[in-house]
Image (cartoon, rainbow, N blue to C red):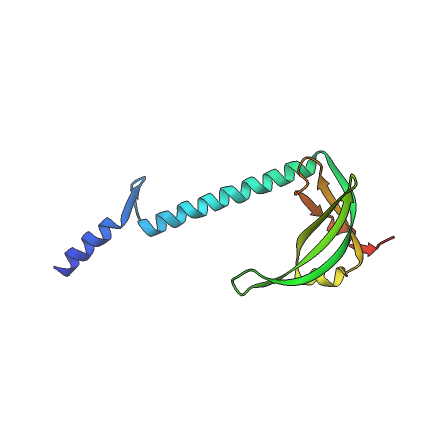
Length: 134
């Protein structure tokens, strides 16, 4: 009797897709992961497109380096940098890996590639490293 009841309960919590039974919890997790994946892919393609055309290279001054908590007790690092483009000041943040901390110092400059179509799309040119500001 209990086995029959459990089977009915399990049947209610499954979804049949393409002839396969899948748990409703797993199905919704799969849908959520798919949406996040498509969103991340779209953002990456958008950034790459914006950074491949109509860009300008600017020199930015590092104004702060700090440790951040992302809410999951995982710590990371960010640097805040400042630059001017067309007489407008921009202050932006960039995530930094722990092994990159030795490469950057407050007061140094870095080279940043900025999309002129969308100023929020920027990329630190890591191959140049950091250098003393002039």
